Image (tube, rainbow, N blue to C red; front, side, top):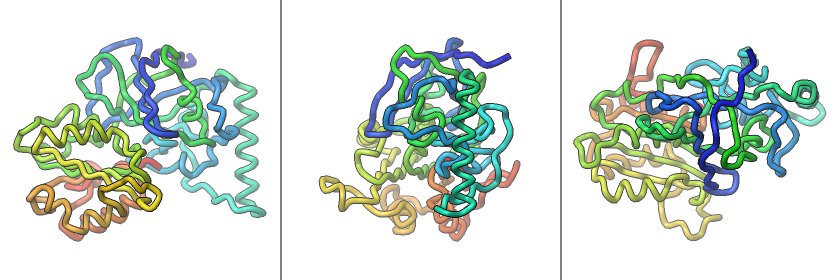
Length: 330
């Protein structure tokens, strides 16, 4: 039986051009999940796309497709979806997507894939396009699920999600899944490092697990190109002001184009290596004190992993839980 819409948009806030916070109320509440987990969202191929978006290119855009830390396909700004190239049929994508180089067989592959996607959408307008996204809301909330999304103009789903208005309907998967949770670090101080919408699972963790003034330290290092792309900045700044055990460290990479910014700039890995975490918390950045969570750009994740391994941190490996935990978005 084909999946049907089972949730309603109850709030839509534009953070910056191409960035929104979307709140969705499933028909069946409460919706149980652990902070850090993700769930599938879906819309039919017949749904409108925002005017600025490009034609459908399912399976082409590198920023939409990748392998997540759990070994299954990730797409757009969500994680661990298994239906990127199939419109929800559950068949994994190829391990690698050719680069689009003009005049090469790879560029023709991209053109052919896009044409096939458009033709498939026209032939089956009721086809459900599904992607998985981390939940940003508190795990105890029973009114809605919150998502922090960035649009991929040539993507298959986000241009449709960005076209949604309050009271519009969409599909939400039956359950949340994922192991990128604080269950891996009971009682430890937590360093959460993320880029862009990789902040989403950390918002859920903070809203669910932070005890303001408690003994457990929480640190968020969040990177974006510009200050206006630092989602949840007002909430996190206020939280850091009132909770001595929470530390918010936003960083931008293009300060020359953001002349009003007076905060930190540069790449997150450089901040980690600089000793800024130790200065902020008064704790040495070692596995005896912290567990590290990484979410977002794989280049950032790879570099920080190298730094962390040199300090004695150990990556998760299968059922063996280490002190370094990753979730890649593409």
